Image 1 (cartoon, rainbow, N blue to C red):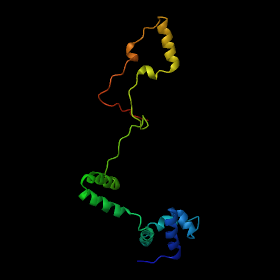
Image 2 (image 1 turned 45 degrees about the horizontal axis):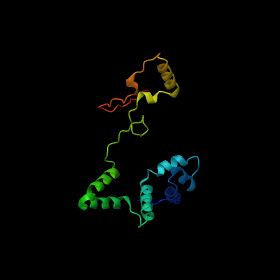
Image 3 (image 1 turned 30 degrees about the vertical axis):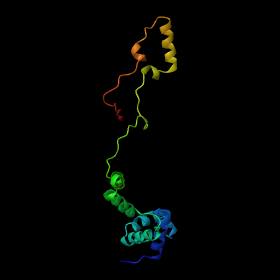
Length: 162
């Protein structure tokens, strides 16, 4: 394995501190004009990747559970946890990305879609006009407009097309 130059070592340390490769390259002493390219190249070099892994491992605190330790703990719970097995398996699935993406209704902004009386969604000015016309006998009210809507057997999904 090839050893790192002083600039590459500084790059690795600054990359762990900032999590920004271009900024790390500039702080390591590379030119601002070439920092983007050098940063990208550095992140593909095996010796720099290995050094980053080594530095990350050294900086992890023994007090904080790492991903591997969490997975091992959840696996033990899943295998021998009795009633806690199912939640542990579910959490392991989440960590592994094993769930299919969830479908969301973007038209309701995440709120429950409730049926509404059509009369309740008419603007107030139109309601007043309708009531005045009913009172003078020029309009015969439709009783369906004020009654509860029929429930649909299947949810209605709005499709947005461009």
